[in-house]
Length: 495
Image (tube, rainbow, N blue to C red; front, top):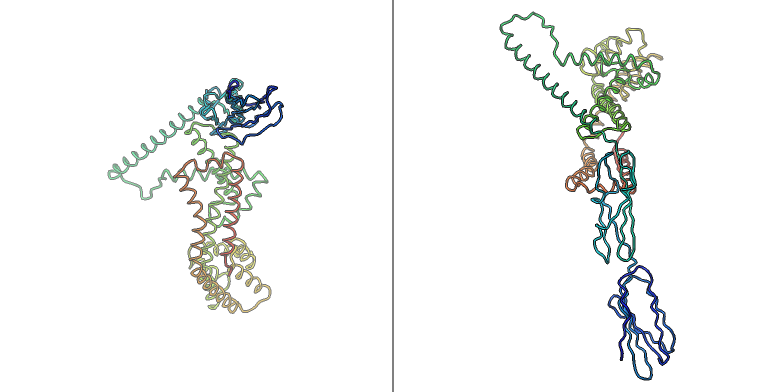
C-alpha cells in the first residue's frame, strides 16, 4: 500500500473542488470523507472514472482514497481542507451614542467582535470615523466592519447624535445660578440679622399702638397678586383665553381674591416656573434644553395646576356634601318657625362654617340683588354638582312655579338625604376591604418596577433602546390604565 498526500489548504470561505483521476491500471476504488474528525461510510466506485468531490459546508475535511489494481491497493490521503463560511459576530452595546461637536470620541469602546474559528476580533474592527464630520450637529451613521481569516465580512450600524457644543454657554449659566443662589443666601442672612436686631432694640423703643409693618412674605404675596392681576388684564384681550377662563368659573367660590381669568394667569406663571426649573436642572447637568423640551416643560407646568384645582374642588365639594344635611335641616326648622326662604338661607350661612356657609351667603346675596330663588339655587347646583343640591334646586323650582307646602317638601328632602347618607356610610364600610385590595393591586406593579430599577439600574434599558421595546411599554401602559378604569368602574356603587 502506498500513501500519497495532496497539498494542505489552510482556510477559505469558498467551495473546494477535489478531483481524483485514477490511473489506467486501477480496477476500482473507494473514498472516505472525514469531516471534523468524524469519518463517513466509505463509497465504492467499480469503474475507472474521474472523481469530483465538492466541499461546500463549514468544517475541516480530509479525504482518503483506496484504489485497487493488479498489484494490490494504493492509498491516497489528502491534507486538511478548512472551509469557514460563518461570518464573525459584531456586538454593539449601545446603538445610540451622543457627543458634542468638535469633541473626540472613541467609537470602539462600545463594540466587540468574535469569530467561531478566529476567536476575539475586536482589535480588527474598522469604522468609517474618517468619513464623518463631527464638527457639525446632526445624526451620523457609524459603520463597523470586521473580516476573519477566511474572508467573511460582517458590518453593523450605530447612530451618533452630535449636539452643539454649548460648554461656554453652560458655564456662564452655571455661574449665573451660583451667583443667584449666593445672592439669595446673603439676602436671607441679612434679613434674619435685621429681624434679630429689631428684636434686640425693640425693648428700648416705643412701638405704635397699631403696627402697620408688612412682613417679607406678605410683600412677596402682594407683588404676586399684582402681577397676576396685570397678566389677567393682558390675557383678557385674547378670545381664546376668555373661552378657557369660562371653564374655571366654578372655582371662583374657592378663592375669593381670584376671578376666572386669574386661574389661567396662575397656570401661565406655573408654566414659566417649570421652564425655569428645567433650565436650572439642565445647566447643573451641563446640558442645554431644546425648544421641544422647553415647550414640554411649559405644558407640564401649565396643566399641573389643573390637578391641584381638581383635587381642591373635589375636597370642597366633599365638604359641602357632608354639610348639606345640616343645611337642609336648618332650613326646614326655619320654615317650621315661620321664616321665609331668604331668612332660612341667611340662617344657614350664619350658623354653619366652611364652604357651605360661603355658598349660602352667595345665594343670599344673589336673591337680594334681584335673582329669583329657583335660579339662585340652580346656579348653586351647577357650581357644586351634587345630588343633594339637585334635590334642593328642583324642589324649590317646582314650589316657586306651582306652590305647595314647603315644610312637607323639606321634610321629605331631609328624610331622603338622611337615608342616602346612611346608605353611603354602610356601603363605605362594606366595600372598604375591597377598595384596599384594589389599591394594593394598582400600586404593586409600580412598586415592583421601582424595586427592580433600584436593584438593577439598567434592567429596563433595552426596552427604551429598541422600537419593539417602546411598543411593549405603550401596550403595557394601555393595559394598566384599562385595568385601573375597569376596577374603578366595578367598585363604584351609585346611591
